[in-house]
Image (cartoon, rainbow, N blue to C red):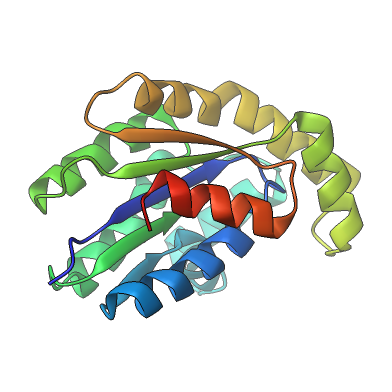
Length: 196
């Protein structure tokens, strides 16, 4: 059996993480023939927020106010996916977590629980302005000027701290990838970084 990879994608909104995750999952399956567990808490969270529970209503209130959801909800979204889906025979690819220092430490405890050593952290590095321009160009309804600015500010104040923590932590194999290249160039750099 091929060695199992654990890969965490981080970077600003608009850095192209989703595109690169899709390409890498396809490559992992082709090269190793093993399944991939894709942990993308955003989709699960959007389903949850559309529910009719008290918790969902509270989360909608936070979202309407433009606030950042509490850490425990973010952690629940990806932790539940791990608890219910890990078989210990698959690669795991994380997209969109950790978003804060508190999440980074809980994620690390989860990875150690499952026996994952030296997980790769793929940091797709783009400038704030590059990310803003890309988000405006994709034309999604939730990509308003105000919401984009809020996401950039949140990244600078919260997510950047988690990135710095993982970069300085010997547990991780931290790889900085220049995201301001073509999709193909970024993908090739990622594959080289993880020896795929």
